[in-house]
Each structure stands twice: as structure tokens, then as C-alpha cells.
Image 1 (cartoon, rainbow, N blue to C red):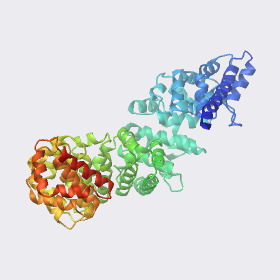
Image 2: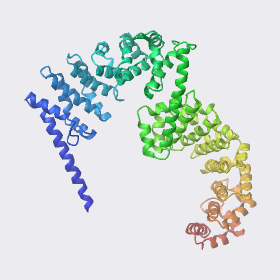
Image 3: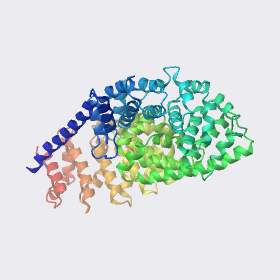
Image 4: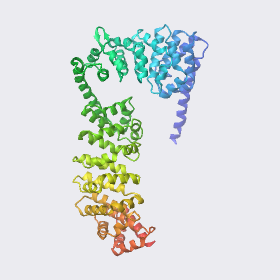
Length: 612
């Protein structure tokens, strides 16, 4: 009964939050400007986080629902509002924008961007900085269309002019540019309005944040853009060429983020032909530090792979980190073999998550670069990549179908012929997953590409894992009656030979159990079961395993018998008679007294088929 108290308690807490938020919103409509200002300042209060309205996303959402945003924007744009009030409004709006994506959508629906851009025309620096800080937060949100920055042709030149006002305007504007420059059209607009000249001197700023955001601007401006790259190579900053500044930022005493971003800038310039490949001063240094960058990437990917190996929550956090999946996927095409290997290991670790296979791995089309990796890579990469492919081919993975369409069957069949046992295991394992509940055409493609000769070679493989996965493939191929009958009509003789050899061989319990389960599947066919009933050697083996000392083998043999004698199927009487003559009924009576409840129940169920 105590649990019934939980709901009213939650409702009362929610009522308090709503009432508190309503109180703050009501103060925004007070006729006294001083009280309005005090109300806005209270909304942005951070000294007492426990009681502040804006302390968490739920409170922010509550404030938005109660209509605070339109009122704040109204006050921000009113000529009669004091500069202090306008600034505080911008601060609160910026705090709301730091909430969820839905919060940002609500702000965009209220046309916050035009209001904030209008605020940039103010002569007051504090107000300008507050507007830019809020704009930075909104434009860096994934739900904000970048085009909103370019709608008004006067915005970009005005932002360029504001770059000289303070280190905060420099940081926020550069961050806005780097996030909103998404292609050649945006690069051209920024370039034509003097982005290179206006941002270059910021690379020597005393503020690390300003230097870093300026560097990011150059990396997005130079990306696949020869015009920008050729311009950058001749830009002087305090008497030093820009490429030389980038090289200095590659040094190991600089933060990793700075090293990697400056390496990007130099790489893009090299690709554009702006930097000569024989320029030792730049290229050799770039080569040295790119090797260091490769080591850093490799270490990072290894760390993520280790962290995500056995913890679903950590895997989720890694994948939800901004741009993380893009970075890992990009790592698959790195020139460094060690980085590629580390990236594949990282993805393999993350692919253990069912949820991520269904969502993030499909969203980023991870299977495409993975298939490229599998086409031509060293064995050490192939082993991990093919193991990951096994996960992508699981029945619930949306990547399964496009992988099939990209020629995976031939590739995997090729892996089964590798001298490396791990590659043979992964190749056959992936085919096993591919065949699970597959259409007849896919199964036929697998058998045709693999060939019965290779299938039998795998069934006699010295590696136990290869043998077990091959038996698993056969079980999946021989499922659903039409498929069983079709496959056995063309490959029945060879399959029965293979089954006989395994049951006669020196194999462990698990191998023989799998083999008997294959026989049980064959016995479930309509015409395929005749291949068992006309093979006295196989029938004697089934009889032998019914009396085996190991329950697993007895149960597997029982499944064979049950499928053969099921009285609702044509020819069941003749099959029952033959098996009775062999002494099967006597064994069933004996097993019906077994201390193992499962085996006992199966035996009694089989006996009922004789009595029906």
C-alpha cells in the first residue's frame, strides 16, 4: 500500500515547480520596469542553483511552456527597454538554448535569430556579447539550419566588423562561422567578405579559445577549396606566413585539439597544391606530426573500444558524443594501418549493442566503409572487420539487406578459404547469420558461391570453431520445409554423407548434438525425410544416440524420431511401422521413465503419435 503514496508526492512537486515558474513569468509582465528587470535577473540567477528556475532542462522546458520566450524577445527588442534589461533577456534566452533540442526548436519557432541579429546593431558591447553568446549556442545546435545565417546579406559583413570589438566577440563569431560553413557556397560567401584577412590575426591571440576557434574556421574554409588554400599560403601574420603558424601549432606542447586541427589545415592546403610536396620546412614537419596525430587517434580508438566492450551505457555515451561516429568511421580510411585497425576494433566493440546496430550504425551507413576495408586489408584488420560484419548481419540489423546487395556472399565465401583459422571462422559465422530466416534465393546464393566441395572441406576442418559454425550454417540453410526439400533435392546425397562421417568420427558432444539437430531439420521436410528413412545406416545411428549416456544427444535424436513419426503427415504410418520394427518404440517406453523431465516428456509425446 505504501507505493500508492508515490504518485501524489510527484504531483505535488510538479505543482510547486509550475507555480514557482508561473510566478517568475508573471513578473515579466509587471508594469514597473524595475520589477521586470529584477524578474529577468532572478531568472538568470546562478548563485542558488537549487532554487533557481533555470537550473535543469525540465525547468527550462517548463518556462518555455508557460510563455516566457515571446515576452523575453519582446523586451529585448523594445526601444523603451533599458540596455541592462535587454542584456539580461539575452542571457536568459541563451540559458534556455543550452537545454534540449526541443528547447532550441521552440526558440527558433519564436523567430529568435532575427531578434538577436537586430541586437547586434546596438552600440553597447555587453549587449552585443550576450546576443552573440546566445546565437553561438543556437547555431551550434544540430536542429538549427545553417542557412539562417546567410538569409540577410548584411549579417556576414556586420559580423566581420564586430570581430575587432572584444575577445568574446572573436570567440563567438568564429565558432558561429565554423559551424555554419557547410559547403562551397558558404565558403565563398565568407571568403568574399574577407574572412581570411579578418580572422588570420586571431591565430596569435592571447586567448586560447579565440586561437582555437579561428583555427577551426580555417579548417572548414580550406576543406576541398583550392581558392581559399592558395590564398592562405601567402597570408602574413605579424611578419610570419600562415602555414608557418600552422606548423608551430602542430608542436607536441600544444593541446591535442590544436595539433589535429592545424594538421587538417595543412593537409587541405597540400591536397589543393598550395604547399609543395618538396617543401621540407613544412611537409617533413607535417609528416612527423601527423604520425604523432595518428598515434593519438590510435590510442583514443583503443580506449573507446576497451571502455565500450562490456557496458551498454558507456557504448551509448560514446556514440552520442558529438561527431564521434563520424570520426571513428573516418578512421576506417586512414592511411595508417594501426589507426584503421584501432578504428575497426572500436566499431566492433560498439557493434555489440543491439540498439546501436538498429540506429546509429544504420544512420552512419557504417557497413559501406567496412565493406571497403574488407576488400583489401592486412589479415589483422580483416579478422576484426569480418567479426564486426558478423554482428551487422544479425537478423534484426537493418544493415543486413544492403550488405547482401553489395556482394557480401562472394567476399565471405572467399574468407572461408583463408589459411588463417580466425578468418575462416568469421567467414562461415557471417554466412550462418546471413542464412538465418533468409529467403530461398539467399540460401541458394550461399550454396552456389560456397560450393559443396568447400562446405565439406569446412566440415572436416581441424579447427573446432570452424566445424561448429559450418554445422550452424547447415542448420540455418535447412530450415522451413520448402527450403529443406529444395536443398536436399540438389545436395541431399553429399549432406547425408557428411552427417554420417561426423556421427562416426571422434567428435565432442556439442558437434554431434549439432549434427543430430541437422538430421532433425531434414526429418521435418516433406520429401527430404525420405533420405533418412531409406538410409538404414543413419536410422541405426539415430537409434544408437537415443540410448546414449548423454542427455543432450538423446534429446537431439528424439527430435529426429518425433519429426519422422508425426502422424498428421503423409506416409507417417509406414514410417512408424518401420521404426517400430527397429525397436524404437521399446526405447521410447524406456525413455518415458527417464529421470530427466525434458527427455521423459519428449518420449511420452512421441509415444502418443503411435496411439493416435
